[in-house]
Length: 108
Length: 193
Image 1 (cartoon, rainbow over the protein chains, first blue to last red):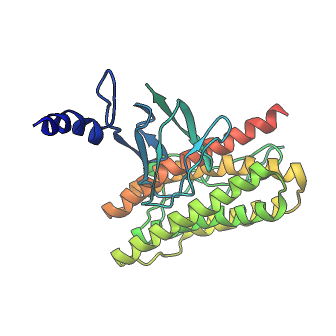
Image 2 (tube, chains in turn orange, brown):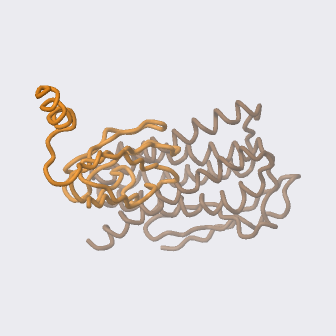
Image 3 (cartoon, chains in turn blue, purple):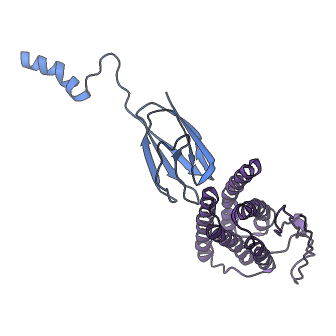
């Protein structure tokens, strides 16, 4: 009987992870479309740990490159291809092939 | 330096063509076509529109090739690479569409004029080296993209009958506009130096 009580208490902690205080938020996946030479939406608000997927739905190839110091960058994204990244901090980014295309990630 | 060259074309199916306007650019003699008003535009079939669209893209690919041969500036080389790749992609999509539609691009007065003007531009560009070449190439890219955007909006789209071809031309405009802004950005950098 005691065993059942102990397992009933600890099993949820084992399977869900130990999260004192508040319930953890499950990471979400957000999509940014690249079309008509724009990132849509141009600014995206996410939580740290969320995943952002860029999908190239344009006529030409693009990339996604951190603007200030090129701290991160996607490979070349041909038409129809996508690339994803886990958001960790605020970033301004652009397409280095078409520098007039700009976007922002705001991490809350 | 200013240039004013009147070009006259006579084709049976054309109305009076007072639409060829000349662009005179400082430092280079670049001549481009620019329709003035819709009613002055030449009448073009979808086959002829397709030919003009492919020719206009091919001209920019050729000029990018020239830039890659003559420039040593990283930004100019990168711009030229982007022009070559983007315009190749557009030609690829245009070719796939005309094949699907069973449209065979047909040579016409406008595409011939574009090629003649491009030959003159290339001749001038080939006389330049180093920074002088870079500036002339970028100045030409600004003027060329302005002229092509104007022609796509004012001539090619209105003249096109087929909706899919019209949509393709409409979809090309954002890329042309981004190229123009990119070229203008480089042009401003040269002006600031």
